Length: 467
Image (cartoon, rainbow, N blue to C red; front, side):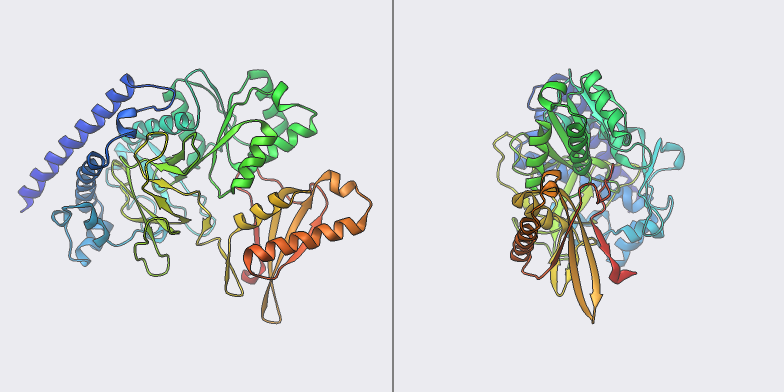
């Protein structure tokens, strides 16, 4: 039995190495302004699923024989690697959660010796022990390929100057974008976050053409550009933005595009899966293409764990197909989105996921109603007369949950001395929010620059019920 499994593992390893090498060779031969690796981005569905199955079998083998946690949970489920014969068999496996990674902190989920790990990243650990992610040299190589693919999908080219304002360090964003930009052959400015006026000076002087950062920081940059008296069309050379790491609405995209005079696309990633580069929008902006030759995505009901039909929103679950250092099986992301199997006009054949509307763990439940910050953001940007900065404050009064939305006035609105108009504006905002949520709320209009700005993920919620 053991010899048979070893033999199967060697065969699957050979197949995977063949595909990886052909993937890299194809990437060198087939470059265009639309695709980075046209062969794999446009694989016919049947071929793509065959490739997924081959890589899934190898991942299951590696996980079972090299990761005690996975061997234990599979044996408890009465399963072994030999039981994975089709893609649907993946659904027989138990889920992996952030708690599983924390329980095996720091290196218990690694499938290779630490001597083969060349990079270690981790989450912030603000709600407990951080989750630790390890990468082999081949993992880093695949990550760079995926990020080059993602940047090209977002509009970047070899002759671009990429202004990378994602954070460098244990957070995966900065270095993930960085190595993808270098793989693309573009010039990358590793500026990270902070010192926004200096960032804008460098954009002007160095001729940055692509901006990569969180959407909230892009918005903050646009505000600072206006404060400095600069005209994005004349003083900046920015052409596009690849923005992610936090939920954002379509209206926020339009606001950023208008203020910075760029085309902005969404990029999705999660540290435990690989980092940025799991999915990205193309120029069509009709959903984020999941890199299905490297990941399998499922959408489940967050309460029952049952698979949800195509087009319905649920929790995203990812399985890695090519990771060596930290293979991940059915990882519950807590991110809420839907998937679409329809072909995209751009020609890519991979599943498209919707923009993440929120997370099950930052979703607010107010008097039985689910509330996501992005819903509030969308309303505020439609109403106008305010800045797209807001804060949701939840209190409990007489055993009743009270949601107060702090809304920051624009300088022009605040300068008005007509109190009546401000009162009317507050009433209008409250009415629009209540109509969108089906929930009564309070609205508090605050002065410009009152709400704290963020150079990373914006803090949108203060839930005093938890204090």
